[in-house]
Length: 358
Image 1: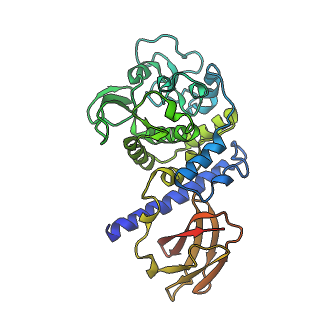
Image 2: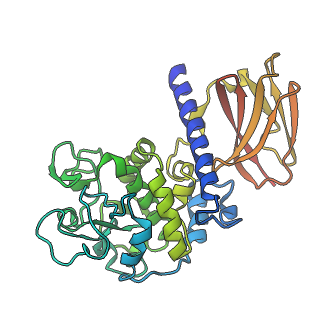
């Protein structure tokens, strides 16, 4: 990997961390439903399957909303700024209640309740059948065209609403797929990450769908959804929807709250690819560490530098401007697990991994 590629990755990672922190700060404003204090504590410092299991245990016991009550949920979870239904399958102007399906014959006739993970894949079972995080309002006719095909990418296909239907051109699958609009691909990815986490204990029993394999997402689906997740970051729409659904179901989509967790769970190259020749900038000892860690910079001009420590979710747990070439940091109260230490100098930021053990 070239120096330029590594710098680009570092810049992207740093930008994502800042976006996460801004999003978390917004979630804690009084006007919004809040993440309960300590809600994600048991997931701190984890990654891979340990993280997915911890998040599963946090969100699994949700309040079940009835299928008929989804219509009411949508009035707060999926309302555009003009008061119309926010439909990700079309640009139609649907009014709540009066434009509920019923019957339809054309696009823009009505909106219905679309199972992003088709209900035939899990035999219409509860609570999946009415989980508002994945059952979303969409144009009835386009929903019919989508049928129970998996999401995917098709370079050529028949356009229906804002999506299209055709043979999958994403590597790893060649069957028929439905491709949503680019502006909602990240939304769909994070919905599927939620479903693969909330229902990891029952996915293995789902009888259909190329999107899942065993108790997880299929390999080609993971690769595609991570691409979508990166190309279409969390939007204000998703933040608002996450808060609204939480007010009904008492659980959250963790991949909207902390987008970096999608990489921490599913990207096998998540940890090592952000830095290059980091020893030229600063060193960490001991590593792994238990009670304290010593950061030593290799620059004489350290007065314009800062050391920042992030946990696995992107939350800042330590930040200090350097006043000497060596900084000793007390980590006794930190959860065990993986952290990232950032050495910030001028407009550059360099990362290294720190493992805390107890």
